[in-house]
Image 1 (cartoon, helix red, strand yellow):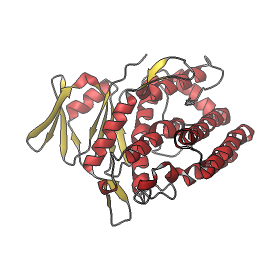
Image 2 (cartoon, helix red, strand yellow):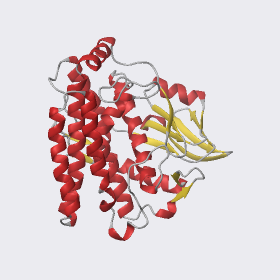
Image 3 (tube, helix red, strand yellow):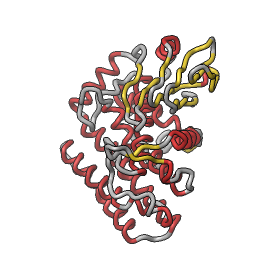
Image 4 (cartoon, helix red, strand yellow):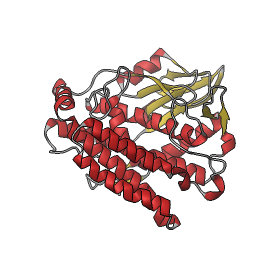
Length: 339
């Protein structure tokens, strides 16, 4: 099994990262801010105007370290990809499945996504008592899961997914503690740009986890751009976005809600841009990324493998299971279904 390593988040503007023998050195102007062993890092995420030396880029390419760039809003900009791993037979099988068997895989992914959203709402009811509105959405999402089995086209499946997402996010603010709802106002999911603090956090975490998934798919030899649910589009890692759907509620949404409800993130940690976009301040991003890294180190029993694994390995495990299905080792692709 792959060993979970750390992710390095460079969130300040005008940082310079370079390789010095067997260490990564982070500088700002002439001041050394951080020095850490290079082989302990599996992901480097750069936000804003961060520079990376050619030597460190070469190391990332040679050692499958995921190096990705984001703007200060958390929007993905680019990533560096090294030598292609895996074999061409696996990728050919992926392309054939994308043309001929995409509906079956997409159904499994969306059914798991909706069930994981439903599970998060059920968890809220167990922990905080009955809420008629949330209970009603839980019932509707159960029906949505059944609808995924009957969808006979991708368009119909996307319609089911869109309706389920709208239902789920219609009660999302009720998952925030009562005393904080007036500050963290959330009415609907907005992107490009996010229009409120909750959306700003969701977009940032989705973007980072999406890059984790892209790196995992690349590592097992799959093409992150050729998916089954999301349509092919130049510059988009459609397959990574597919797998991300399974992980959104369990890994991202729960993290965002926990940070708000525990008041680790406050409304003063955000600022409004002239464009109407809302972004997190530097110190708040550090809190979020530290919490995400801690969450990745927690262990669960994987529902399909029935083995204890670290949460941070979920993108790698799902990429591996998808590769096994495409090779013919598994009859169906088993999406991540949180218990």
